[in-house]
Structures are given as structure tokens and as C-alpha cells.
Image (cartoon, rainbow over all chains, first blue to last red; front, side):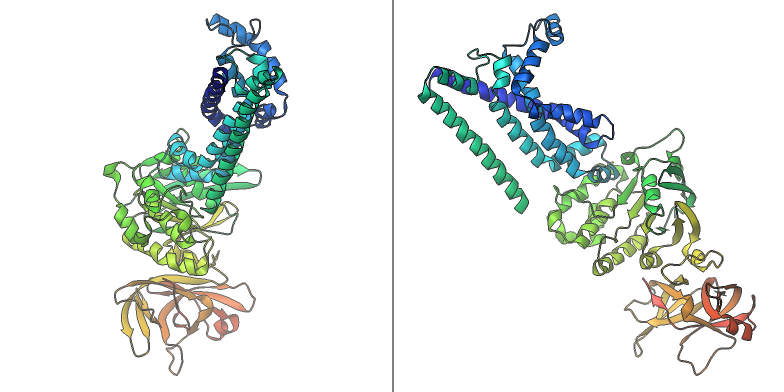
Length: 223
Length: 358
């Protein structure tokens, strides 16, 4: 594999790791709210969070491009803050990935919170734990399987994105050219051998991810 | 010991359910909240804990936990709560479960040691186990010990035995009695099980449709004739007595109470032990003179206080007073008329059966 290939692999892992970590942090309050609210907005927010599941990636990419572009509201904001515009930068790619993979992180965590229910929080409160204390000492440990699923799915899904990247990131080596785009380039240039290396790598990676997740869930069930 | 009473006044109106209570409960012993499911007893308990928010006032001694301006959050109230299902934290071992609450209590407020809680509930051999590897009865014992370990000033229990089968209940009841005897922590105990209430309660609050229908010391409430509160299907009284003599030849024990004594089947109690007896109205008959030539061994001198009609037109309920102890007897109206029974009259209460409930 060429240096360009390795650079794409490195960039992909960096993007996926960063996105996953940020999503676990940002997704937790959203999942918490969705799991516990009785607000009528729950349906609306839940639908918005789930939208990336059904929308074509190019649609997400298109609107992000418009929003973050020089004339879009987000673009205006980032420019006034001296950050420039985000499309065709690594940061822009991270922002896009956050949206694109949001449901894959929020939903498993939300399910975990819902399965835990009110009771452990009530018990913790009668044992002198404040809600925040109980969240870290009881809810988080009990939700661990949900977080594990969320992290694996969020990571894997970000690794696999292509359409959004193409729309918002373009194809800049070292900044936005991730593995999926690199494979596309190889195929375009009829470099099938190179395309094979990366594609087979992705294939094995995906299989291992799903296998490890299944093994983990099964072990938990029999434990 | 303490004169701290618990004042609880709550009003809650929901479309399907209302709660309207105004109670002053003793700051010691066991208070049973007794009623059918849906009577509001669990809601009342949750309001006392602060798990449910209802308009009202809640005060333990001088400490105000709730009034128009105040609502002390649950985790800042010096109470403990035992839920219907054991609700142990599954990710923590038994020992860590026990420590969870205790380590959140300030050092100088720890009056019940972990060792004491472990010893009281007999769970020393379970400390390193995970909750998933405990039986239902063991789980509930651990959760009671976990509650004790926060040294609560008020202990609340919501039907802690109802999820357990008969054998498990019998396994736990003695531990609850030990709490009662050995710790000076007021306990409010929600139950719809007559046997548990008869066995444990000192004070009884009967509830129906979110309201209190009767309350007071259990002996008095059960002996009321105007609005009889029945534990189970029959009227009857409970009384506290002391084992004074054991007859090894006939396997009987004599239990003395202020105003009389009865012989009961010897349950292996030691002399001097406090026992709780239950006498049902249907097991008591009345004679004008002490009987000879009767198989009934318990005859207690008593005085008639009151006679009222029972729920069948043939029957009457009679309230007797033996010393300071009230006893109920169910007679036919014909017998009452034949014997010319009237208030103030001295009679003998013949007791056919006495149950030792605890």
C-alpha cells in the first residue's frame, strides 16, 4: 500500500475516533432527555435524531454545505469567529460525521437508559446519592453494554461514510481523503489491486467489529 | 425513647386517584399502613420519602422536610426505604451495595455499623457475592441491611415481603422483629398482609381510597366495635405478653399480660421473652362463672364494655376488658339475651384458641 493509502487509513481512524468520543459526550444528555422526558417534543426530537438513518447521505451533505458555506448562517458565524469556513476541512468533516452518526450512538444509549428505568435512581436517592452522583455511580455502570454498542456502531458507521464526505470534504489528501474516497479514486483510475487492499481491509474490519459485538452480547447474556 | 413524632399532611388529586391524609405518627416502634391495593398506602409512603410530590406538610420532630416553602430532596432526608422488589444494584457486590449508602453518610452520623447491619440480617456469608447469585429472600435481607447502614432516623418499607413466597417470608420476619426489638428506629411498614401486620405493628393506620379510616395503637384499633378494622376475614385482637412458665410435660407455655394469662402451645420461647398473641372473636365465648369440666384451658376474668350487632343478624360482638387488655367475643344474640349480658358485668372469657404470631 502506498503512503497515500496509509494516510487515508490514518485519517479515517482519526476521524472515527474523534467523532465517537464527541458523540458519546454529546449523545448522553440527548439520550437521557429522550429516555426520561414526558414532553410532547420527545417525538419531534427523536425523529430529528433518527433522520440520518433514512436520508441519503448526499442530502445531509448538501444542506451542511449550504449551512456551513460562506453565505450560510453557520458559515457566517464561523467566519465572524475567525474560524473561516468549515467545508473542505477536517473540522468540517468531523461536524458532518457527528450528525451522520448521531442516531447510531444516541439510540443504543437511550435504550439502555430506558431499560434501567426510574427505580435505581430512586433507590440511590434513598441512599443519599444526588441525581448527578447516582448517574455516575449507578446509571453509567448499568448502561455500559449500551455504551459499548453505541461506541462500536458510531465508530464503524463513521468509518463507512462516503456520500457525506464527498459532499462536504471533497478529496484533499491528509485533510479529508478517507479510505472510502481513496478506494473510489483507485477504482476511477482502474487501480484494482490497490482498491482490493483497502476494500478487503474494510471488509475484514467490519466483520471483526460485528463479530466482537456479538461475542460481547452473548457473553453478557450467559454471564 | 424519643418523643419525636412524625407529622404527615398530604393532599393529592389526580384524575384516577386522590390522597387526603392528616396524621401524627409515633416516633418509635412499627407503624403499619394497612389497606387493599389502591388504597393509597404506597403513595403515602412515597410522599413521606419525597419520591412523590404532593401538597402538604411533613415534619419529623423539629425537622421540616416539606411545607409550603420547603421541599427537602430525597437524598438529603435522613431516611431509608426498602422497596417491594429488593432493587439491589446489580453491578455491585453485596458488600459494595451495603457500603453505597453508608459511605455517603457523614462519619459522626453513622450510628449503625456495617457489622451490626450484617449481623442483624444474618448475611455475613454473602458479602462477596453478586446480587444475581442471591435468592429472593437473601436479596431482600441485603436490601434491608443496606437501608439500615445509612443509620436512618426513619425507616420506610413498602411491602418488603410481598414478592416472596411463604417460606421466604418466614425466613425474613424474624429479622424484622429483631430490628424492632434491637434498634430504636421508627419503622413505617406498608402491607396488605394481615399476618405481617398482626405480628409486627405497634400502631395501625388503616387506609381506604386515599383516606385514613382508623388509626391508633393496634390493640385499640382492632378492638373498636364501631368501625371494625379486620385483619383478614375475622375480627380479633392482638396483645403483647411475656412468657412466664413452660410446662414441658404438656408442651405448653404460659404467657402473662397485664390483666390475665393464657396457656399457648410451646413454641420454644425462653422465659421472659416478649411474644405477640392474637385472639379471634370467634374463638372467644363468655360464661358467668368459671367452668369446670370444660376442655378449654384458658378462662380470663373480664368485664363487658360494649355489645353491638355483628354483620349477621343472629350474631353480636362483645367487647371485654381484661385488665388493660381489650378482647373481642362473638356470640349469638340468643346467648347474650339468655345470660342477660350488659355493660359493666363481670364475666369469664373462655378462649378456645390463642395464636402465637410472633
